[in-house]
Length: 146
Length: 443
Image (cartoon, rainbow over the protein chains, first blue to last red):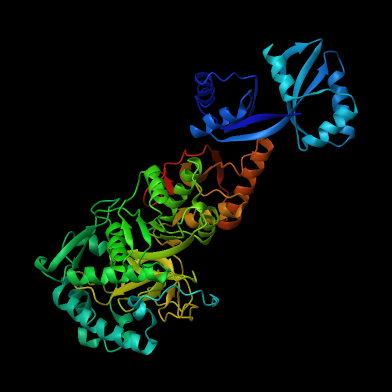
């Protein structure tokens, strides 16, 4: 169920973002999704790629600091209030959401969001109990690449 | 300092016998050698004769070891002023070796050795290795720099005299260092502690686990370091980290060395006489109190040193050590009086910053202190490389880390720094002594 996300520590300076992006491009590793969290002096680049182990090794070999985090891809209907419903379920169960970002892809009027929780396993249990679709690795990559 | 339980003894090397000389006998030997050396310095070195005459003293006035405290000091400035050969006590025809410091400001200082001096140096380096349990059969990778710097050749001669196998790899080329560590079944390494931390990092990146190698001891010196750094090294590499002390002006490495009790280096007192003084007043400190270490060579022929002010801050203890050595110990040098930086009127030592950083969980050994002056006010920025252990994928997590580091430095130094988190490997790695402070203040 859990998706591996790579997080990179980048200093806030010209060229910081392009270095890892170029490395991945040269290795023909496709970025399935990304988001940047920025602070004043540094940023955290979060990436989803299919072969995360190869990407991690490549980036680390070039001196970048990479952390692997489990995130969940959750299907949310493309209608007003759908995200609020999902968040409501999590809130009730007392699950802490660290951050989230979206995939641009849509299917059957459903969007996909990536969530990072303190406790992803507990989140999976709660979401499934409430019939919210958590999309696993295999399916995610199929959808993204079809 | 507490007494330590007796450690499992390494095979005893007869060369270590003087380490266990009864104290009375040792003091007698010291006085005898001191008298001879002072006479030699007086008769052959202008500076010493002048300084002693100014005080109305002559060699015959040294009747006891206590009289040493009445003799004048000398320091690095004297070596610079007499550049290159002004303090030599023997003609050049007696001198078999010259070394020089890499002077960061102005002229270097030059030091000289007669054959006898080289033999003494070899002897104390050999005893240094023996003291930390090395012996014939050990393979020593000597990553101290060979050349004008005394570290490389000093350790080299000592290792060979011990009967160990010495690999004269010198400093630098970290990948090759790691390859040799691994392929040559190296059991001990000599280098600066900061360089070994760099080796640990690089080995991890190359997928080499130092804990799997036969490497068991590190002989670390040539720069100030801290107990937390020792713990970090021992934890991450599985070796024992021993503190060696020395300086070119006195002989090079091998002035003092730790035993397996790791309770501070024992001074090889049969050749070097230690005192600790208050830097400001020049008065001796009571035993155990921190002050500036002052050393007198007891046997040096080419270049005797009387009461040389080392600028190294330490303390002296004569408490018995678990190893049974009768030699007094000094406290690890974690700072030098000339390392001190003054920020907004507050005295700060880089070692304080280091221990403050290491107190924060998942500690960060690679740091640099940048001093600037903005609108007449000193600013201290501490740049810290983020490591895998402390990197959080949330901004909140990193901000917390920054806050914890700031707080820890503030508690230790009384100054609130700006802590900047930077990418791994952004601070240039030194292959010798680490450069911790960059002072950009324009005075």
